[in-house]
Length: 334
Image (cartoon, rainbow, N blue to C red; front, top):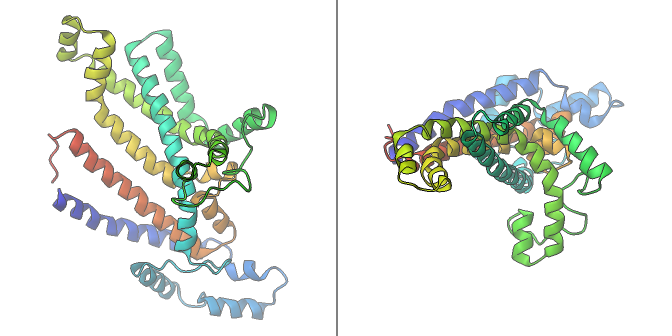
């Protein structure tokens, strides 16, 4: 196992190197000069050139990339051109918000996805099955930003059930322990902050988890259909076991391996792909932070955020692979 993990970690190096090259080239070749943006439209050419020299943008690209790479190797992702604060500090100050949103989304997606998949498999070719699969198809096809806007219009603007945007009502932030407001609210006994956090979390979590719900539902259905056709399921039914026990204890248990794999991969995707949801709902996480940096051509923030999210995504994949081995001991790590 240790040999396998070390091999996977070594394979990460060329992946992360490729990502760093791509994001560096895109930011330096296809975006606006950050010196012009920082100084504004009234700056003179001399002022812009002076700032470019100060920031090191007058150096050849390969020199700038090498300096960037050396910084990463020392755990230094640079400072924001706008706030002059270390990128790692700003990133990890916002990361708990993204984690909380992604976890809420994957919990919703897992509960509804597995439930819908089981019902759809048990009721195969029934009206319930057709409705479930149509709903799953809609979940896969529907753009997240559009669903988010519709949720805001219906449940926030018209019905006033949930807040329009933000993470918590102003002035109710709990004492920071983990940065996850739900955990911090419970730990400090601040129920007012907990209720406000949950209200703000519902709509963005539903929007973000819609795609994952559909994927998990379809995977659960197909895996359950394959499992329930096996001989041992027929044997369990022939013994007179209740259908609920056959489905939940025998079929679902053996179908969990691919489902857990999909859930793990979806969680990694949600952590790195919450950009649109965070932007639509004004969620103060890493996604909105990165979008704001892109609009301002804040190179160090974009480069650092993309690489750190890539590390987290690949790390999630590795955890899923390890968990896969524990669920199915027949799997051999090579």
